[in-house]
Length: 192
Image (tube, rainbow, N blue to C red; front, side, top):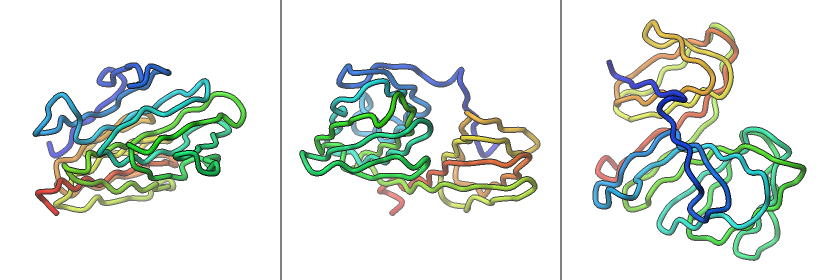
């Protein structure tokens, strides 16, 4: 099989690095030089109150709103940037001090974090209509989180909340219901 399917039984709830809340870690790839650290990590956080973000020096972060009214982010004391459009990514360096103010109550956000000295990752949002297909390119590893809907892959039905990790072989996804996918293409430095 050229992919691995992950679901709630594979995910890990854990406290934020700064102790200010909790997150659900969907995927963690250990850093080859520092196994206690991650090379790449995907998580979903439920944010119930504003406050400072955890610092992740040497890590590139991509954050997007999944549910809720959003938040205003103040990067290193600058003017606030509003993140209020669902699935609109914002990219920033993990060492940048960030303070968050909720716009109107709790929210859920999706986080992609990649150690710069390990490689990079590109995130895209893909909307599929019923019956549509999408082929993931050969030669690159992908992580596909199904935010809404369902799709078929290799005779298996993938449901909302599940994550597919490909091994670099081309795969075709077939939407069995309207689907919103968060697709991450992974590029380790050795492959650049």
